[in-house]
Length: 295
Image 1 (cartoon, rainbow, N blue to C red):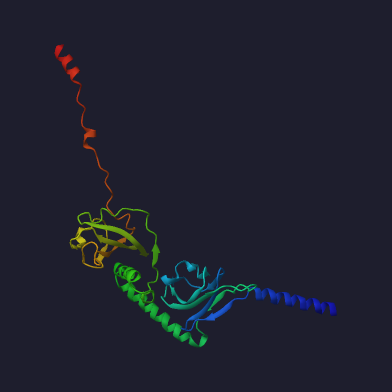
Image 2 (image 1 turned 180 degrees about the horizontal axis):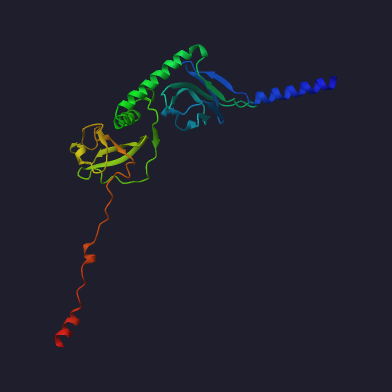
């Protein structure tokens, strides 16, 4: 019996050591920032279990690599980082989760930090979650009553100009990629401005594309949606005019919504230049004419 007991204890010890090596630190989100320490050169995984957008301060630069996939966030510090706050925003509900990170060099023999799993509020506060879900449902109903082009335009403007924490949630919206190097020369051909596509989003069968407009002259340019060429549902200028080139007012954003297709398919096609002389009849050589007269 004694050898059997020893073997059982050894089996339990191996199982415990295996469980310890795969341990996950559980953190409960209760509207208080969560402290997430990092080790330089090591990646730490954070399980959020929801699709999130990540707000990273520009001051971090290349010192922190951040990746997100299927509700999992991967953090890797390339250099020591002072205490810094990251924002994780739920892509559906708009709820924020705050992470306070700090990165320090790893000591010799120091084990890699275990993954983190962020869980919701305790059971006693489920009624608050229900209230928030109810308000989210009400906001969805309100957004459905508002015309989709209006909702998309407002969402695009908030994403470009408003802080991440103030962006209103829009269920069902997703960001779409823009065709590489598609031309906007025929969008406003009568105005001396340069146009460049910034970003695009889609909701159901509607698209919205944000386009940066920049004045190319020293004169003030008035923006009139009637001068736009293309098949658009709505057109909204962030400002109604552009200031002279080189000033702080020489640039604005145009929001174009389309239905059933993206912006690239809604622009007028580019017409290639045609040489009219190619179709003219060729004149007969003079020598041939003279020979006919002699005959």
